[in-house]
Length: 107
Image 1: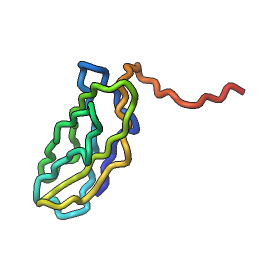
Image 2 (image 1 turned 60 degrees about the vertical axis):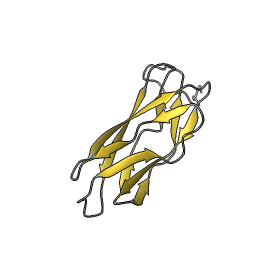
Image 3 (image 1 turned 90 degrees about the horizontal axis):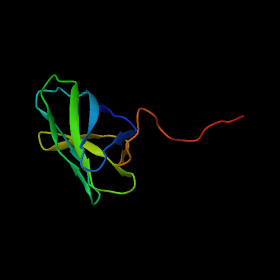
């Protein structure tokens, strides 16, 4: 199971964000796949999403009533078994327009 997700998702207060997920299944894929949060931090809500058998894309809705960015991890569950997890995804309450802040090289 490979779950492709972004490193950061914007979720300003009062406006839900969306985590796009690209799903690559390595099992037989006969059962639906549920994507859910492992443990939501206080102030973060995540709606589980279902991927139909053969499906490769999902959108997971996330809401945040937080002041600072927090990480979450999604897990993939099928037939009652966890078969994969994402890397940590930073849920950021600050609205940014297409720019990820980070170190800059000003040399």
